[in-house]
Image (cartoon, rainbow, N blue to C red; front, side, top):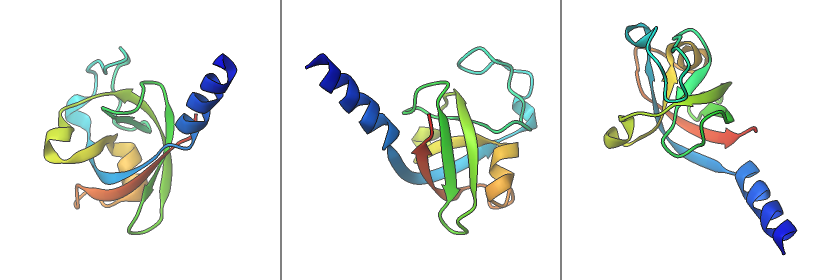
Length: 112
């Protein structure tokens, strides 16, 4: 039974998918500690999530243009109160979206 439960948890985690709005944060946060204790660097491909475990690698796809980027969750934040599911570093966001737009529709898939 324990093996089944462990397999179910692993399988459901790997098949996790979420859609919603993502924003970005940049240089004004550089040098500050993230939730996992790292120093934030806006040029890295990292992100903040309140629902995905710190350290998890995710694929973030811009639903409007189908561009994707791999990010590592290293932070959490208050962006949820604005109806957003993810806050991406400037470096990650600009890979898949227009910084001037500020908020994009995304699909999030867990890689590992």
